[in-house]
Image (tube, rainbow, N blue to C red):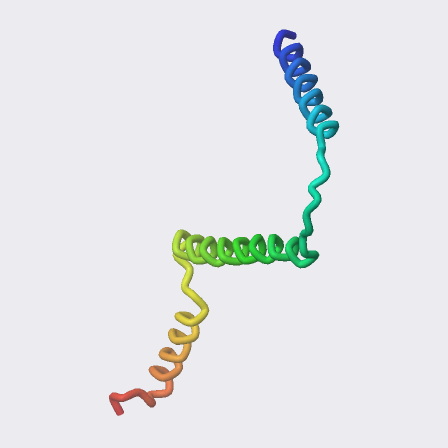
Length: 89
């Protein structure tokens, strides 16, 4: 029960801080280009794409999977060995 009281007091204090910050807003008197907001989306998207690329490589390495290029080379090399058109002819 003590935990709920503490949680309630923290929530009430956070609510008071939010209300105070909302009431103390001053006008900025500044100009922000409409395209500036899109810059944040571009940076965020680039970070997401980069992290997904790095994670994909880490997961493949962790699971022992081969990259698509390595699989294609392996299939091509197997075909050359089966048909006997390799350099040993």
